[in-house]
Image (cartoon, rainbow, N blue to C red; front, side):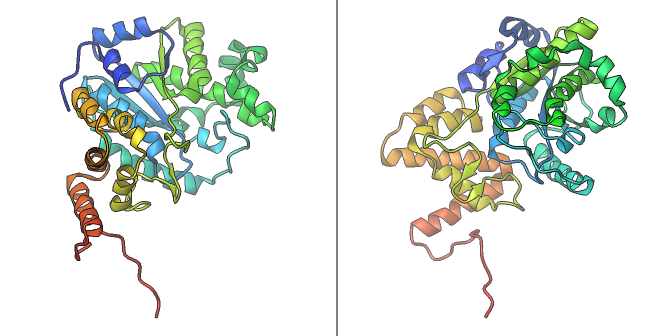
Length: 341
């Protein structure tokens, strides 16, 4: 990874990670003052993360490289409800065993992108069930609910969009649970920054405001753009389904092929977000045309697969692809299917 500029926020903006910030100037100053702790949340709705989560992991990787501490929160409690933001329907309810299995699968992806441990800038995995499971309903209303107006919550787009369909009282409370998560992480781990997709803006704002009202503490929020591919697909999805990060769900060769086959218009943007190449090289590769652009796509596929599955897997996928498309006979590394006689 190239050296980090003194203005880390400017670097993140240049690479396309920044959509909104609750206080850009204050956050820039906080990042410059010294190490801070930032958190990114994941609900355990599947046993693997997918490419749609990769933007957040890469942002946290840049923060760690600059000396900041990532907290990776898995919603062992909030997964039981499901975030209703910008969804047309409720998520299916999962049992405790499924949630536990999903959490193990998700954690296995973290260690490929971030250094986990107990050091000052080592990433740490936390579970919000640790503080939400023991929180009584009346206590929650007293500690959190009294700080929020229903009228204000109904003005957020994430809530209003669901009112056109159906929004349960259970789901309506999700944003307050996430706000409480932020204040608890601030108290327990000194966390001052929450990161999320653009659809998390309302939830993040509520956490910042709750901390200010309860403790008078200054917290920050940063959202990332919600990315779609240039042909309109949601990032993380392909014609064959989700592009999973765990090899058990998607073979490294197929992962490599996802990037190799991306739309020409996405190459420069994806290189900035999903590789660690210097921006000068990203711009050079993104500006290539015709057959040369195919070489840039191979660079993208190699870099993304190296981070997700390691250099040997990336090299094997590239070699297998050359065997297929150049007419070679080996085809080593390709997925195989055994047919019954």
